[in-house]
Image (tube, rainbow, N blue to C red; front, top):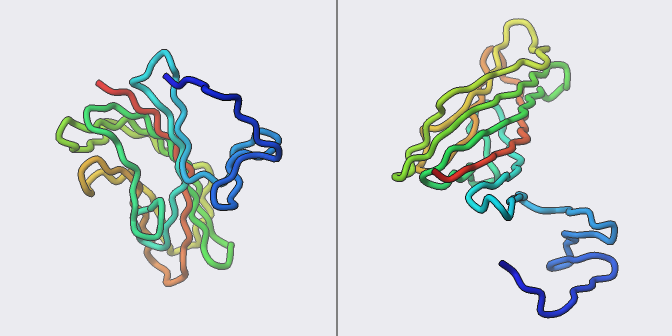
Length: 168
């Protein structure tokens, strides 16, 4: 538990290296991920991520293929809102994937169940686009795998992902 040694006051907000993280309205900005914990249940947390990818890819948290890290010996409830849009903006696919995922003591990630809801499908005729859960990568890693076929047009994918993790 933290202890306040002095009162903290920052008129105008809080920043690191001139990047504002908390503004004067107490809004959190410019963070890579956000973890929320309940002080009563210290073995549980909620974290939000933004993932991106192009065409057929494993969606990533950064330009080096980073995936969501799931700690060992946990159960996670993962909800991803995923959108794919072609370069002209004339085709799109919007999905919501809700999953229950475990990560064993050894870091083996396994999707126990998933429910996919197609929110909007305006994929051009003759093309096929899809996004599914991806749990076959490195230990303790989770993401989504996107595919496209029937086109050479670039498809940009973005996902807003919420992970609720509980230690077993």
